[in-house]
Length: 187
Length: 187
Image (cartoon, rainbow over all chains, first blue to last red):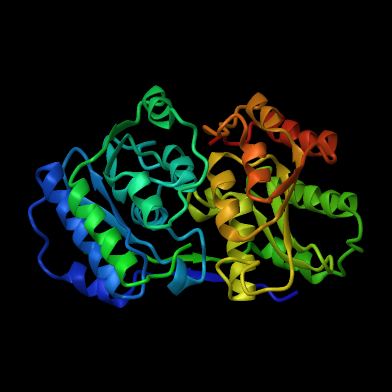
């Protein structure tokens, strides 16, 4: 039986983008504005209109980035949040980012996570999630967000994962709307 | 900024196992018994006590297999179901298995999916899920199954994904219990 392999590498445009000087990441707003810019670039480079990044909450250091790579990787699992989590774990060498670490980690996502990404966050060792657009903004342009518990944010809070929503929601939603206007593939 | 990469390859023992003649896959029971055997081997080879496989429901052809590789890959996303779905998509070249295909696909999993894997299944293009142990069997030995909607099976049915549960539940649970007795890592 032929055994395929799967290789995940950030796209060239994103690697080039990361080689430029990074802006100051001090406030939540600065971080989110930069991640939304990534989602715009990803959309213009055959990816989906979504991006994410993991930061060290203690030092504000950027640990990893992700963009929706479902179409370029031929893999439905490769949502922006999942790519950012995989890369953060490869970089730190820990499958649970906060276990055996004195640091805490936060995930910024340009849209609230779908059911799969919501499920992935607690396993990854993230204690703070910051979102731009709401899932209804993604559904409005035709993306399916899946079946999450209605009170998933409360359940996150019970797991000591704090959630901030609606940060730069307007700007994040603009990227979604522009993607829809250009008839981007929905999945 | 250093950009890590992620390479997913099945472990050597599993590739060797797949190079042996495969049994006949005609009934659900034959498929599940074989997948449970994989979960036992994975457990004995530094992986978690979980395995999964994708079959073509029309021809009974084995498309891909997965095993829990969280620890060996240092990646919390690499549950058995996710590995099997990624590999099936790489093999077929389709990020939605049933889109642009005349075939339908089924996922066999030795334990009911956690919240992340539950969320991943509809995106992958699977129309039938067959499970061994229940999620309470996994929770009983200390694994966290995450926050799924209480009626997730009904929601799957509304998406035209049928779910069969409790197939060889006893045998699947035995692998979980044996893992717990050997003090396997919980995550």
